Image (tube, rainbow, N blue to C red):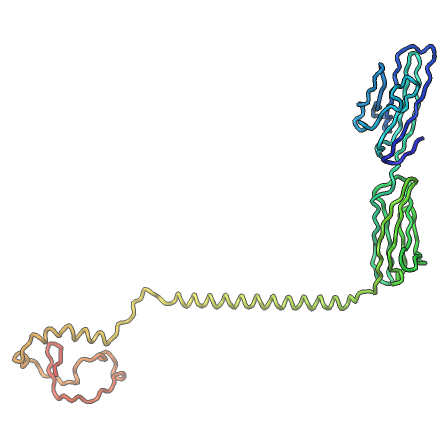
Length: 326
């Protein structure tokens, strides 16, 4: 049984003596015996026909060598450099020199010291509550043990604390503000240690009633504001819709009504040429018409709508082809 720490160097011994009757060629072979019987043995290094072959096992290329460069001296020991946790296993040394054959097994255990240790708190840090300080190492060979201690204040663990060295848990019951401080956890095994720290801050309970009330009020205010914005948007849309409907009701294809004044003027103008072509002698034959029968621009109005004109300063008027001449 050989135990070594990760990253160190180990020598696996294998010495032998040759009998006089052993006259054959010398072969020294090292193999790794798998823990699974269904897998084949893996050759690590070999000395045969006065040559060394050390490229059989890729995982140990450049890390394995014979301790004595000439195993014919009776020393077939090997050195494994920069040990890794995967190098843990059963190794066997086989020496052959016909007709003699001998072998021996060595159990190598590569120990890994604790590393990447983390500390954390599980539970509420309020007075009167129960909580647990936890410590765990991501790396490290068994058997790991954990130990907690307080490094501030009284530097003593609370009286109600309960430590489990195997799991790294420190349970605290009914915590108070005196429990506050910095705690240290040390993880250890046979070859090394590692530590971590955590700060415990015990505070009075939070006023949950006030928090809930504030949350409710804030929610109601938010809903009111949202409803107000929706109302404003709906009102704005209705106003725009009404403006569009009024605009479309004004028909652009209908011409504006004619002015009655322009109608009367066009009537007089159309007959002016006829009047101008007449001589005074030709006017005698036309009938005399009272002035109050002269067409006016309001001739289409009902009697109740006719305006009262001032009395005319002319007594007679002559009508010629629907034109009255005063």
